[in-house]
Length: 146
Image 1 (tube, helix red, strand yellow):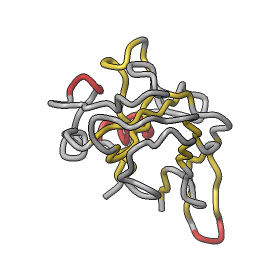
Image 2: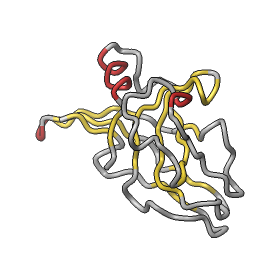
Image 3: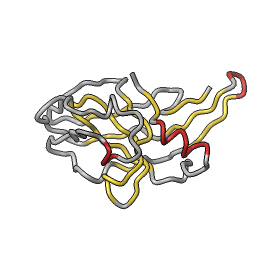
Image 4: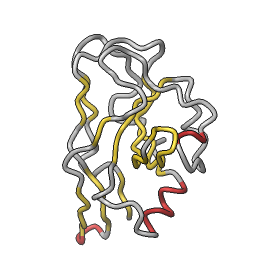
């Protein structure tokens, strides 16, 4: 059930959200309401964020996405936003399983940041075991517009 948040769609259309934006990723656990509040304008608007709390994960800052790029696929009449896969080193178990990742546009604080996309495919849910965990993006990108 991955999706792009409504205000992020507006920000894309207004040119406020680009590959040059400070895009980050956070992990959320199974008590989150971020999967049902698609109209949230900021991360702070979620009723319950339930950010991951296992060792090896730092809350309230997100992990910066590297190598962010927008690619046009003329043959299939679509474009997509992609980035390098994200690796969490030695990720310990959280209080609950990680249900999804949220891509966000950073804005000084986590609470004030724009939620961009909710991603629950590609290995979710999981709980850390002390091993490295890689969030591997779909080969067609994180966000695809067709």
